[in-house]
Image 1 (cartoon, rainbow over the protein chains, first blue to last red):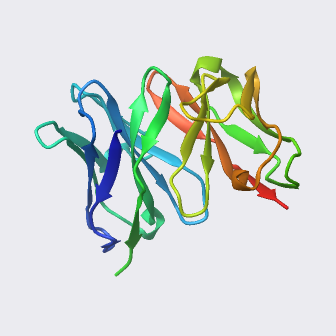
Image 2 (cartoon, helix red, strand yellow):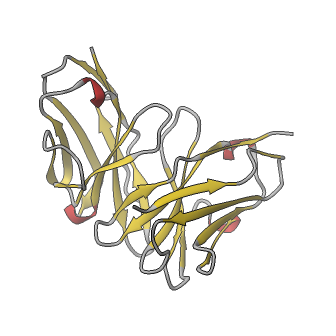
Amino acid sequence: QVQLQESGPGLVKPSETLSLTCTVSGGSISNYYWSWIRQPPGKGLEWIGYITYSGSTYYNSSLKSRVTISLDTSKNQFSLKQSSMTAADTAVYYCTRYSYTYVAFDIWGQGTMVAVSS
Amino acid sequence: EIVLTQSPGSLSLSPGERATLSCRASQSVSGTYLAWYQQKPGQAPRLLIYGAFSRATGIPDRFSGSGSGTDFTLTISRLEPEDSAVYYCQQYGSSPPIFTFGQGTKVNIK
């Protein structure tokens, strides 16, 4: 059974770059697409972007200038880097598997809370 | 960009009752690209329905999806206490790829 686990800092200073990693266990990172989604406290879900198994990336246009998603197949991991963090970026960040068969996010990590504060 | 509007914002029902949740799109959406998720407090969302009406693996048959075009519905027949959660609809748009979510409907079981 495929499981996802996010890791990274829980606190980031304003203007700094957030780096999160998602480790995929119980299955290969190949042959699927992988995505990041965030949820500000008490609010809804916002798609950040995804990366295909071949390394192609697609980002939400609202975040595109600040976001990079990368893949490390040797470690079965994918990562998110988001620059110029502000308080508005405070959220739970989820890594997910995107199924292009279902056109939906079928497996989610538990999420990691990231607060932006000095 | 397509906007998804969910209604009602919240509803409170008793066990055994039926819940009908609406998701309306600002433009026509292919049913293939419409999904529903359930999120319980402190948990990650869980995929319930994909392709507008297909249940994901392990989802009980009391959850059903329907609709087309701009109007989609998630129905929970015979509510159980564990169905208390926020439910989100999500659509996929291509060129360029983008995924958007509705604002959610909170279901409270009395």
